[in-house]
Image (cartoon, rainbow, N blue to C red; front, side, top):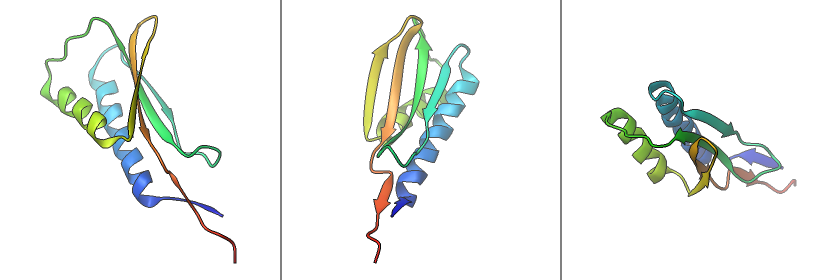
Length: 99
């Protein structure tokens, strides 16, 4: 039986909140998320930034810094609009053997 790991879920929620803050404060940023699902061991949030982009706001820089430090992996992709960063939390599920 699979159960969501509360620590991993808390980390994912914090990532989602930080990404949401950036999405609200930066025009033209696109937020995407892949919430936990039993078929995947990971959950992620992604932010697509237009380029070039200069970030002067310290709140946005702190949220972006948090995303990098709080995730397990970061993936970058070049897109038509700019660059996309995907921040992933691993090991979202606890597997318990049925007795």
